[in-house]
Image (cartoon, rainbow, N blue to C red; front, side, top):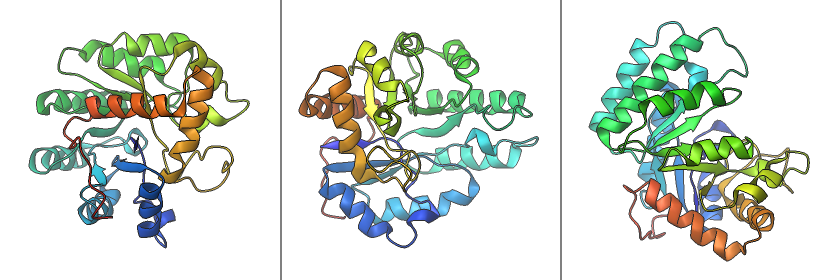
Length: 265
């Protein structure tokens, strides 16, 4: 049994076949689907999907760094209100993104730090986005780290040294997705050094589909392909990867029931 710890299944790319896609995931053994929020516009459809599949789909709440601007007060007020009034499995997707633009880096840092503090207060893990910003992102995590903070560095594509720094934080994991299957991505070689003990699996659907689906829409049913490549890279069996990553996901996202029924698919 697998967990997809990061999937945007509410995305409009799934509008025509969302229900079928969820069933495909469960049929493939991916029985827990964790949905990070992005901004105000994704909240309603995310909640609706999770309400329709309460034993399979689990929501997070947060403001994505790509949607941070000059004034984030209204967005942050909404995130805080929802975090304090509704059940969520994590605070996410949060972090820093310097891939597109560095204009609002100070605002991204401020928003990220505040959401990290809410997570600690509410005893929730964090799902961290750090595209082209590992140094800036982990610096804040290290500053805020204590025995209440735990989380995952989503879409990890860093070096073995980066992985060691994440693992040294304590209750933090590496989110491994489709990039590990890319021949020139370099992540498989990194994971051969790092190992699988601190990993969870994710798709980031509809983005970053694994080989042999690269370039197409990603979906949660492809998790076994990611698991197979991680197994090969780390010298483990697929069964071991399933066991390790399931245990890690259960430990990290510990508000989710340990025994999952798929009757509401």
